[in-house]
Image (cartoon, rainbow, N blue to C red; front, side, top):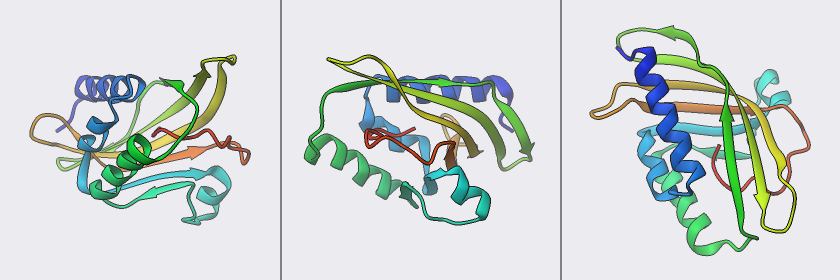
Amino acid sequence: MIDRDTLRDFYDVYYNVLDDLRLDEWPAFFTEDCLYRVIPRENYEAGYTLSTIYAESRGMLIDRVMGLTRTQMYAPRYYRRFPGPLQIVSRDSEAVRVRHNLLVVQTLIDKKTEIVLSAVCHDLLEPGDERPLLRQRIVVFDSEMLPNSLIYPA
């Protein structure tokens, strides 16, 4: 069973990896057959699957990282993620469902810091060998007006 302290440790490391731009490490937080979506609230609440970012395996996450780090061109920026308190929605011996709010801000070198994403995360984690792993992560963002600058994972 995954306890609250283990969850806190997991998310501390998860968000530090992303904030420190250690993107090559990010897919290892997921199971091989994971689901990762960043989706507008309107689509999520209507039951639609159309997502801004969509991946259905760790391999697809690795492809995304390769695209971000090797092929895409964009202005240098820093992201900081501010997760809210973790709410354990349900748990059993095989998995735990967690919900928490997430605020993501970005700073471009020559501009003021701005909010990129205000969202709620719906995660399903299962025990892994060294730490829990995300089997499912659905990031539901509030605004229909998402900046083009959502480059890095949430």
